[in-house]
Length: 344
Figure 1 (cartoon, rainbow, N blue to C red):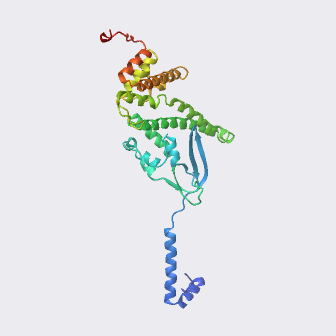
Figure 2 (figure 1 turned 90 degrees about the vertical axis):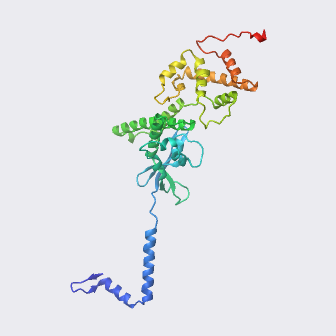
Figure 3 (figure 1 turned 30 degrees about the vertical axis):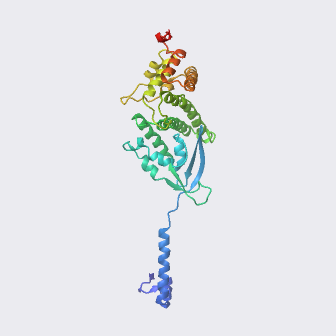
């Protein structure tokens, strides 16, 4: 409403008041009701979600991680990309499984569960227009990897799955750090303006493939399953922690029989910490050109002897005697096949 110097209403406000004076009380009430509804609808309208302005797939070795850049500048990866990156297998509520890891919950000053509980909703990633997707800032993956490594150093990763998550986290942190310094050099020198578009991704993939080679599974699941069968134990599967004595059997059947002094040398390279845990598996210190092929050949022969023992109904002790004859411990006296008195 506007007034002139004399205090009288002028302009459009004067016309509006004149119109309002002609309305009936019912008409004025209806107009007020519609205005209130319009204000309420505007107030209750959900906030506009950020939109994926750019999207792509980050391919690292056999991993494929969907990634996006939102129109507000945030770099986002999908929830499935988070679980894939740390080697979590299977489908379903993978993010919820990360939240439920006891190893992460027990860490102090760890905000990973909080970050995962509040995903970023955005549009543009789904083929269905307007359907929002959940994602996480790319830095959350880095923080998740660092939390897993902290848990590993504290001896909190117990199961085979958790140990694998720690291995993938170690691999990614190393690769991210190397790519980061390369990107900074490219930016400082101006090379980023002329380098191929996917140069950094190719470099990252090369690094990860090299790291993955160090984590290749050297001990087949069947080796451990057969130990349980020969001992007469119920096999719980690879998802459960194995009996601690199985580690002793592994050292005896494998490392003690490949080469003299091998076990002692490997244990020097990966000593136990104050909790009794090793930061790296012993086989990771075997050389690629000699050690790895020797281990692979030894494991193949060992599993064949296990199968033979099981097929003939032999137990653990009979199996051990066969191994001692065919694969004696290096540097130790052989057990002589003496005739027992009852056989004389």
